[in-house]
Image 1: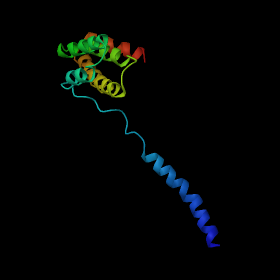
Image 2 (image 1 turned 90 degrees about the horizontal axis):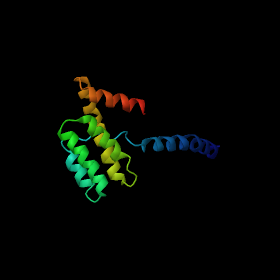
Image 3 (image 1 turned 90 degrees about the vertical axis):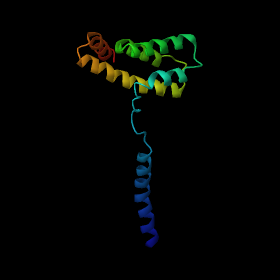
Image 4 (image 1 turned 45 degrees about the horizontal axis):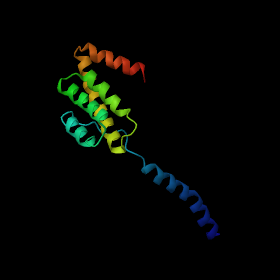
Length: 127
């Protein structure tokens, strides 16, 4: 009888334990945004060995940030994210930069920037 109770206990609690352990190993969510001051240096470092075309896109992105032209910077970061031969680390960095730039774009739109508003509308239509 005790052997049967032990078997039933294992049969009930083992699946619960496995489900609990599987639930604990999930990714924490989206990557954290990258500080706007860090974006140029981090991108330059990450894409130092990239093709010239990719470096040109990084330059356009950095120029957009420097000139506070967030619509251009957002276009460039999206183009950078669509380059097929990037590494996992580069894609993660681009994702983090994209979060930051999209936030800057939303702030610019709230402050009356028509180009930022148009960029956000375009982004929403092409999702």
